[in-house]
Image 1 (tube, rainbow, N blue to C red):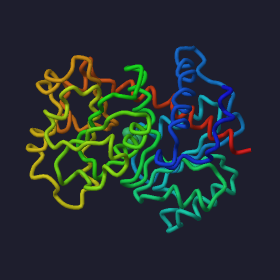
Image 2: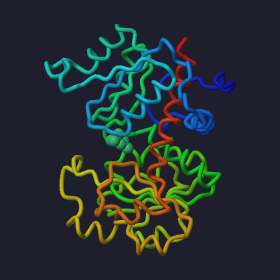
Image 3: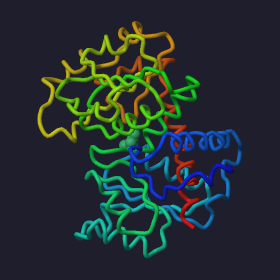
Image 4: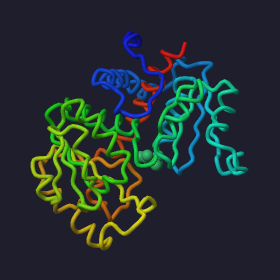
Length: 314
Ligand code: CP
């Protein structure tokens, strides 16, 4: 773990802020942590004495559990704040809650919030390291990193790959983190979905590496990776596509579409899945699917994130 010296970031707010080298360092650091998973004792003492607070204002299964397991495998103490039964319910502000946690000497605060920019506000107001576990429509950097780790592990590279991201790009923080990370590492990204769900200015992220294609059959032709996004009904303020049936027909990944893609195309989905809507069970459970491996890799990637961020705290 000698690479620690190269890392200077205190917070993980978004992949927009990270260089190609920093992203590669996180991915490289995750590899030895993943090797731990085959051992009977999966724990190392790296973060003994440190504390990680999980402050989730929105629902989560994967991200919260994964950060908790990652912290525990590094021997850190973990505290889950149940927002619904905390003083948030009495009207306490986000900053006051974070300052309270800081006063308890929390080394890390992992926050998920429906407002874009919430982790950035905390980073400006408290001394703990802030990790963005998903902020509104903005970014979900650890998900982007684990997706890229999984692609790199399976394909042996990221540069030069054709990666299709399908679905509700407009409301997807996962898409935005993937876009920043993938393009910095040299992948070609095709965004595919209904015109109402693809922001007009999204190509600004990396104009030469991002294309938009509204036809899924054309988009997945020659694709190396297809990352299928969840339709986020909870974030849609208006009806942005005519019907679920039509969405599924035009943008659902099914067995027939999969049969026309490359034999070795990787199918990713960040979860939770709407089976039968954006992805059929036949595709989700197919040999091309790496959805369960994404979850496993998420722990190793989050161990790498905690480990590297911890190096700049002293
Ligand atoms: N991928 C993801 O963020 O899943 P959760 O909402 O379950 O954390």
